[in-house]
Amino acid sequence: MTESSTQLNSVNIGMVASLAEKIQQEPDVADTKWSAEVKWNGGFRSEAKIREFDPIGSDEPAALGGTDTGPNPVEQILGALGNCLAVGYAANATAAGITIKDMSIKVEGDLDLHTFLGLKNGNAGFSNISVKVDIDSDASAQDLQSLHEKVQNTSPVGHTLNRAVPVAIDLA
Image (cartoon, rainbow, N blue to C red; front, side, top):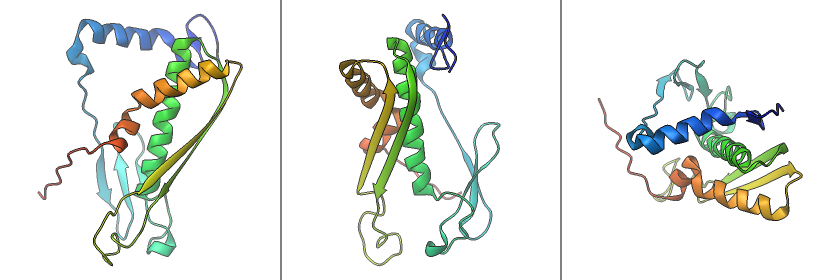
């Protein structure tokens, strides 16, 4: 962990403040578009190419007919939620002057495979997702609770999963 007048929790406070200031001055800057391009690699294997990063592999476990070469898509959703929350805790703790010594986030989801396997109609997605956040900090319980509430209220992935989002899937 690097701490100085410009960093806390290894977060560059100046960069975050600069972005927030720019968005205050030019609200349209906040309207962003994110993308991923997925390539099928045979069987249940695929990979997502995001910006200039190495592709992120995906596969199904052997019990679901895959070769278990990577996390499956629903595991990636859970990971995305945990990662988004970690960013939120780091950013908001830093803004509040709270030092995080360590943090872990456990994300679990309940999913019934009946619909996915075509055995019945219904919800193919998660019926429930639970998250357990463990933060090691010298901050007061009240400050950590305020941080927790702020993160829950500002998580882009959390908000996406908590509401219906229009999804258009077109065949080219």
